[in-house]
Figure 1 (cartoon, rainbow over the protein chains, first blue to last red):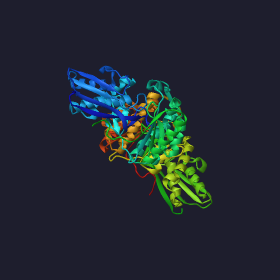
Figure 2: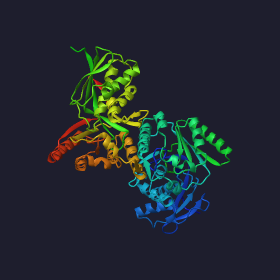
Figure 3: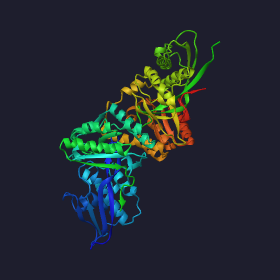
Length: 311
Length: 311
């Protein structure tokens, strides 16, 4: 019989959010990943079980996002010889653009941090989670990991130093997420982006970002709606997602504040100021993609303020 | 003897503010321009007197920023035949990067609006002031005009539609302004800017802008300080301003939250969290530029919340 352990959940997240490529992301209530940590029988951290991953995730600590993020924390604490067993239960899709590897990394490091009662804050263990996600993603950026671990909507001033700010969330803000079952590889989705952008687009996009942040603090839904436009990334990536513009038009007609690509795609998100609009959008999505004979998953969520939790 | 009229003041302003090229500006308490409007003796608006401009400003309404902004408002009101006399008293330097033409345009339109008791708000007459400044500047943007007219620090989501947001100002925020007497032409200062920017600089600069706005709302001076970096414009323009980097280093050593170019230059500004630091910076500036034998003007100011006023 396995020894008693602790169980944590870390949620999916939406990165980029139309106006903040690589610097903005928020946490969903669901889906997400679960990690269990308990005392092991031999020195060091081992992964004893992975479910929900279809055999795609490695058991090697150094190659597994959850394992590696936890390992880096253990190194930091001087506890790499501590006998620990980790179970990883993937409860969300891979390659969906919803921060699957970030959720695993956040859950892994948070579980160990809680189990060891290290006293470190979530902000203090964030770096290890980002290092964990880096194994899957190749880049060191926190726009999925930070919200998955810490909750809320997080703006990252600087990815290198993980200088972050949790933004104010207006009451009522919620999100409709649509995940069409097509494969978009993050690396590929990133590699198609042009290395330079027109100066005038930079100015316009800056206006949208600045006013979006100001509008969040003032619960100014009208300005959130006017701000949520991506002139830079979305036009370069939309073709990777089947019927993106058709879905976007439908979402905006339903009353979405904004609609764009979640992370590197193929998931799409609509920010909404009320549940009814978000539910309407998901109904529309089901109807549209049914006629296209393309399978989708849909998620309704408020902004998740807590991020990774013990449960 | 001239008929009684009304007298207004519109302040200088600092545009760009390191993180918001063309989309961010704030108003100073001084210097600024004064405009007097009174009833005229023949139909239409005429400029009867200009002082402080060294003969450089045209009396032709269609070519004068204050005159034209007022004229556009009169057109809007169907009052172009109204007999009106305008006096313009320039009380700030031209070509300083402190929004001199914007202050004139703001004063011109505001004076007429007050005199006619049109009932239009400052936001409603903003467009005419921007059109007035456009005569001098060539571009339609509100990053000087909006703060000069409306006060505070203003973020412009979109210059075309003049979709703007007045930001929260943390208590204690103040500014030191240094105007070295060299000529920098706005058009030239603009023409040297590269038409494209590296994508990675766009991301970093977005992080700085977003976190600056968030930090303003939360009075987070530490984050304001970490955010106030211009990776895009300042490196391209600094060489136009004598001893810019020497002055910047001195200002940061004094404790400035940030230091950069005001508008198109040559003025420089330091945002500070207290008066003492701002005064120290101005003393340093006097000392530095004295050894360089370059004449400067210096201004200390809080953020001016009112903008154009009747007095």
